[in-house]
Amino acid sequence: MLPLVSQLGLFQAKKAAGAKSAAKAAPAKPAAAKAEPADPDAAAIAKIEKAGGSVRPIAQNDDRREVSFYLQGQAIKDEHVAPVAGLKKVAYLHLGKTAITDAALVYLKGLTDLQQLHLEQTKITDKGLVNLKGLTKLEYLNLYGTEVTDAGLEHLAGLSNLRSLYVWQTKVTPAGIDKLKKALPKTEIVKGWDLQDLPKPEAKKEEKKDAEKK
Image 1 (tube, helix red, strand yellow):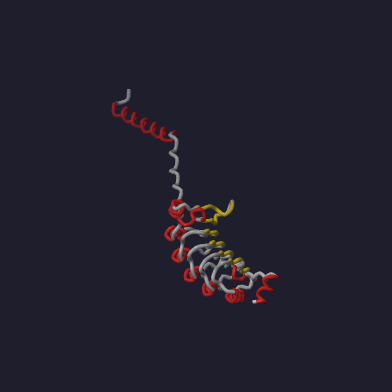
Image 2 (cartoon, helix red, strand yellow; image 1 turned 90 degrees about the horizontal axis):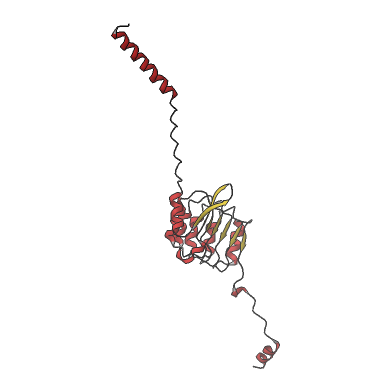
């Protein structure tokens, strides 16, 4: 029979060996899942949607975005456009028929991916268009029914990718259009027809005779 001291040592050795075996047999703890990075645009999108606007990709497998306030009309004011400045890759922006003014266009200065911009029937003027100078990817711009004049068109002269510009029912003149065409020969500038541009109907023969008698 082993001395008590030897028995105690043997017991401790077996206990240690058992602990090692148990440690090997225990399943490894799964690595903690990495947290998904927060969408930096999420806060801006939430504010846009709260105002009644929409944000969506322009196409499947295309991370560029279309932002629209069109359906909200006159309920959309300058302050509702502010969150758009915090979005990346905005390609299409619809602000037509809203109540925005020149102040809203300040928020568009950083949207360098913008290709289409609807500003028709808003309260913008020449003063606001200066904020579009840096939008060099812009291909389509609708200014129909605004107070824009020839002076405002001068701010667009550097937009070499602009292909369609609508200035129907604005204060733009044929002279202003001709000047911009020299700077942007590839741009189609649509003036449309205003009532004052339409030819006056020719007087009927009877009316002519009556006028001659008088």
